[in-house]
Image (cartoon, rainbow, N blue to C red):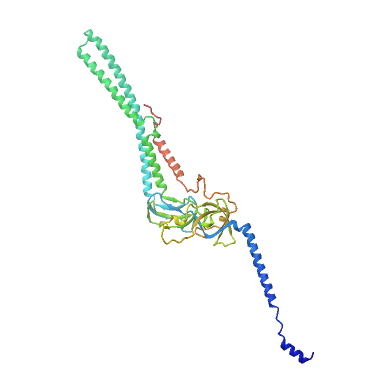
Length: 401
């Protein structure tokens, strides 16, 4: 074939088509394989784990906020803790003016000593009246013998009728004196009968007054009821406070939890005791807290609003409700990575184990949280009372009628 013939053939035949369709087809097949593989991986993940997990990012750290308040009114003279400070249980945080309380305590102690001495005198009076009854009884017996003897003398005309009448009057007077003495004794015994000095009502009332005055004096010093961090301190030095004045707010961070607000459609398989995992926005995904479902709230947040929603209206739009689920966290992790109230969390609950209860079935009998009490102060007050009783008391044995 000549060169001219070849040129004519090239002009007649179209140029060769590049193999792009095969390349595109291979690319689509590869992408389909990748998506299919990812789908299979997700399917296996969902079958093994995903279908047992419920996740929400509507979760926040909760905890106790302990309000420090005074038992008595007074004027603030000293403040020993500032906001963000750590205070330990039993440490002094606020000091009130002690002058009035010290005067009241000394007055109560003096009154206790005075009443103890007065009641001791009641016991002395009982002993005196017992001796008086015996003396009057002897007089009555002597008057009885005189009267009987004079009756025989009147028959013999040894004495006159007037002497016999005088003897009869003396006998009646002696009888009346015995009656009066016994009534006086009964009245005195009523004041102290069947009790000893330490348990006499007047003494016990004075003891209560001393205890109360001592507590009032001790309460001029306000101690931290729990260990925690001071979140607020509205009180100022020189401020006149009342018993309803909030001095400061302490947050004990060793007892915090997470309130995870799950949708109502996620609650079907959540049970008490299931394991959970919580991630804080503050520390990121590098810190995963181990948790446990410890309770489900008995109502949604909107149900406890001051003005709960009324859905019985003509125009009604369904809104998915959320229910708080309380998650307890590992205490060791909290020590290493402390959380603060109100921080945002992401919570995932593993619902594989569904043997637990949806709501707690047994009432709690344990003490969840407690603060310092005044029992130690009363022991100190009792020592003061014992000293006063020992210095002023006598005739401490009980008297029976």
